[in-house]
Image (cartoon, rainbow, N blue to C red; front, side, top):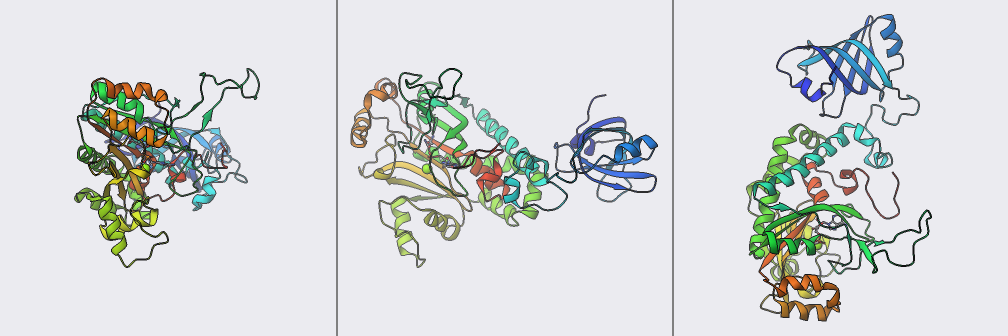
Length: 455
Ligand code: 4AD
Ligand code: MG
């Protein structure tokens, strides 16, 4: 018999004779002559209640069915006389597929701390909260593809193994091959030169924007930065659109449209899961999301941001000076206290930004932007790219980059160069925004942070 997902059973229009479900037991209550078994199969937040009459055989099976066990149930979908649910299953048979030792199973029915659940990341998707997060993670990824598909962008698969450091921050993981059948790294580089895991697909995406027009890449990126914060991980997913014949204002427009589209999509498609977070994780979640949807993002030149930060009475740990990179406390002040909505800070000093950003006429700032969002901090980082060969070469000289290494990148400026722009959005940070989760480790199936490589 074909399995019916619990989500579909709970949304049924009419009773169903002959239903077959599989799932994990959340609770079991025995009564005289019958038992209630609540099961969840991950398809949705809600459990379905199974009422099953006792026969000697069923009693024997139920004796081994505890929280966490997996079961297969045959029965009928009928209207539930109980409150709070429309449908329940009248079970006719129950099969224990995999038992769970009640002495050791760590997810007994009680609230567990996020900290504790991080230690059992392989089991935490079985809980309500983490089941909801990972369904939302899937939905958000689909929404990203949908957004770009509707806007006629092409999805480009950029490489994970690269020979260049896009951000120039020296935060890369080296890739080495091993001697066949051993754990010993081969001395010679596999590719004939050092290779690393990519920190960003941008440089490759630029080549395709300058060929196909509107493109995006969406995949894993890696940073060997040793920051132990609730917003940084060594492996994360980035969404990187790149658009041709576009400037910084177009880039900011695209970012704002995308963020609003994704929030709207999630409110429509993950309503049940988001409601759980709004109730138990962040009571102000709905307000935060509506506020983002209903207001234009602030657009603030960096120089103006510095002026505001200097002017405020608020005391910062890091003193504010023109030329500095904004620290978390400054970013939070701007979006959470001053404007109380997302803020684009743009036109940053050239000295704190990578080589590829377009030089402004003042020769001091570049056409860069960061989108700062309440509770999250930096959600997007992007720029208009330097399309003028002479300016680009002189920037690379100043920063001491090896131009030979970038011959292919420079070709795009040598032949048919055009203004273009793009940005990167941290996928996990977007998921934190729509779920109210405050630690990035809790929106990743198996987070990768310094000194932690379990699972
Ligand atoms: O600002 P970043 O470093 O920008 C780039 O890499 C550009 N090349 C992107 C582009 O223009 N195509 O990173 C972009 C975003 C950040 O705004 C942040 O949301 C996220 O990626 N991010 C991280 N997320 C989790 N953990 C980390 N260690 C992250 N570093 C950046
Ligand atoms: Mg950045």
